[in-house]
Amino acid sequence: MRQTVTIDQAEIDRQLSLCDQVRALLDRRPGQKTAFVDTYGCQQNEADSERLRGYLARMGYAFSDTEEGADLVLLNTCAIREHAEQRVFGNVGALSHTKRRHPEQVICVCGCMARQEHVAKRLKQSFPYVDLVFGPQLLWKFPQLLLQKLTTGKRVFETDDVPGSVAEGIPVVRQNSIKAWVSIMYGCNNFCTYCIVPYVRGRERSRQPEDILAEVKELAQAGYKDITLLGQNVNSYGKDLDLGVDFAWLLEQVNQIPGDFVIRFMTSHPKDASERLFDVMARCQKVAPCLHLPFQSGSSRVLKAMNRRYTREHYLELVDQLRARIPNVVLTSDVIVGFPGETQEEFQETMTLIEQVRFDALFTFIFSPRKGTPAETLPDPMPKEQKSANFQALLQRQNEISGEKHRAYIGQTVRCLVDGVGTDGRLTARTPGGRLIHLEGEEALIGTWQQAKITDSSTWALFGTVV
Ligand code: SAH
Ligand code: SF4
Ligand code: F3S
Image (cartoon, rainbow, N blue to C red):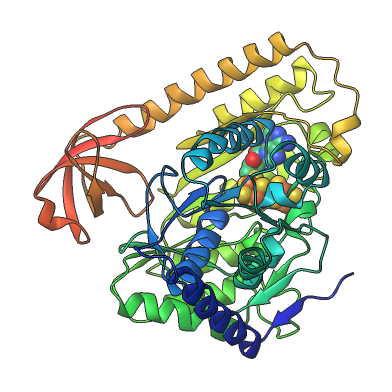
């Protein structure tokens, strides 16, 4: 197994001084320089973008919300499904026009796609105006890579498979002043046979507990109200540290930090979820009464082919154990329809599982073959039309279940955190369990906990008024 590389503070300090050199270079041309950071994919990528913005701010960039006219465009990409990749290629293609109108524009592509050989090759050959490409393991080195591009004028491609790193001390510009992401670990060791993440994000590595706790403390003091601990499989936190700590322990520590905030975490892998974790969740006041526990398939045969290392029965047992401790827990999940070789009977097992569990919400995906993963080359006889029909049937049934679960809130008064204003002009709020409420009330309430009377509901959300 490869070693985790710890990037020490002296190295980050060096990167920060390179930020100052970039700033000096940029200052030679008049006017405020702007950067547009476009993020695809999961919360981990959102969290990474906040650190990239931290570096960019240190370089003197202000942030723009469009690529048009920006001096620097940074696409932080996702490779999880083909659709995500196509969107990125479409948007990179469109940048040829903005760059023509603004030839000084520097175009950077980073994130999970950048670590795929075929993608790096395509960017190199077919998108000559892309200036800088680097994988997620080299995020800490962004100032150096950008300075290299700016001083040599040559394109920079740093997409090799380097060992995963943990870097502390990179500045952060957060997107939100109420909710915050905190990565507690990086990478993944699980190699689910359909998944690209272990190949592009490297092996699992945990941050030191004191670094995580210091960050959460800082957020709590700054008034953040909703803190989400992030990792591809948070339940394996600490396994690589030799400190005798685990995720349940970390949750308890975070729970003891003073402040009026709720703690969420994602994602949990069922193979490592335990009664010990559920006990801690039930005991810790600040830990939200919700769990995102992807099941991926209701068929034990398919789960085995996916290398998930649990069975349908074990999954259902976990749900029972959790509900025994937190009866009203909000349960959400991910599922893949049409894994290669999934039969119609096996798909029906997924249908019966959602019937049995009655998730509050479900993220449904059609299998998308990823280059280099074991599932890419498995025989896949089910016609596309059948997969689509199955997908629609699953979605429809889940929507009914979500709708029914939401209807049960009508008439109740629930605690919620007001977090913004929606496109309809109403406030948006979240229950501790994470359900969305469209709320009638004053904008001044944003960032505060309120009691909301639920008056109506839909498949996706609740509607209510502040009481
Ligand atoms: N680490 C998380 C998942 C991250 S990816 C976990 O293990 O739960 C988010 C979701 O994307 C996965 O749960 C899975 O449902 C889906 N997914 C991943 N690879 C996929 C693929 N090749 N095709 C379709 N869906 C996929
Ligand atoms: Fe992918 Fe599986 Fe790792 Fe999740 S646990 S990131 S699905 S390999
Ligand atoms: Fe996508 Fe990478 Fe996240 S592939 S889902 S951005 S870990």
